[in-house]
Amino acid sequence: MSKTLTLCYEYEHDYKLIGINSTIEDHRLAYLLNQNLEIHLKRQPNDLDFAEKECSFTLYNYDCEATFSTWSLLANKHFFLSETNENNLFGEESKVTYLINEKRNVDYFLKINGEFEDTEIRSFLEKIKNIKGIITCYSIDPETLKSKDFLIF
Image 1 (cartoon, one colour):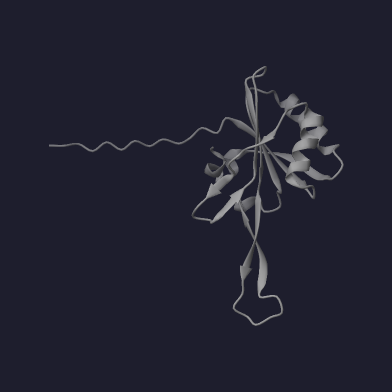
Image 2 (image 1 turned 120 degrees about the horizontal axis):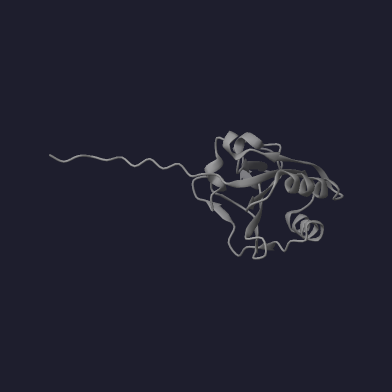
């Protein structure tokens, strides 16, 4: 008689997540975060691609050897043009897809892997809030997100 064993594994989300609302372009935001947080985010050659959503999200990474941490800045929104069936002047309309659908108000996520105290995270938040062009930023608990698995990369 054969037995069937089922292995259930749930990924442990051991990172800090900061939601950023901003009108700044992603490359400019990465530059300003580098200046204010003293990190070195660099654009990755490959974006975060999702075949089922038919979209990609920009990704910036920095591996800090001094603190054994990894910083990732990624866009939450992907804009694209969609052709319409209606006879109108333009024939296309702009649409948006979201990386984390339940956080539609967030423009960018700053994911921080590493051991940081809550006081350090609050300090990062204050520095980010002081950047001109940042509307707001706040800490997000990854466990509350339904689509948190999209942040595993």
